[in-house]
Length: 196
Image 1: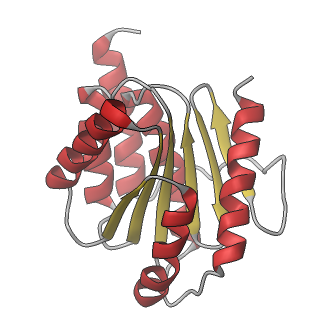
Image 2 (image 1 turned 30 degrees about the vertical axis):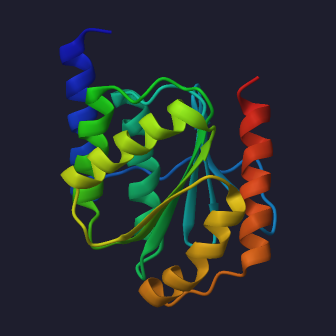
Image 3 (image 1 turned 45 degrees about the vertical axis):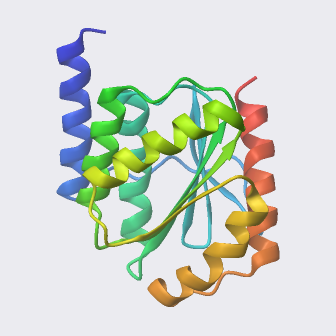
């Protein structure tokens, strides 16, 4: 696809979100007490647990993938007026998100600055890759508003230990730690199944 066409598609997705014209996601093909599938495709899997959107990334972050997140997040926020948290699981060893994705993610976070309570990320890798990815995440945070709580974690347990308290303070919605942990595990399992 031509670079200009991708940029227009991305701008259109952000405009849809900004002006509340995001079409709802198709009905989920999987439902459980802990996880509801919102959308899936090559390189991404989005699910929800209460008012928490879980995004599992299995490909390098690109503008089109962030446009998919914009669609899902816009619909999700519309359903949860008290606010939402957004959790990201990044598969080990993925190339760093490209510049288009970083800019789009910062624009998306700015567009939803009052509706996002917390953003948590789990990096499924260690060493230089994890350090580089943490640096990239920090650079996106510098470009976006500072109105939400942020944490980058080495594993699900660390994220589950942090999120429930701050999420409840910011949204008024209580998350049970064990249910959140099950939801993350289930989202991982479903994501792995969808990427085959």
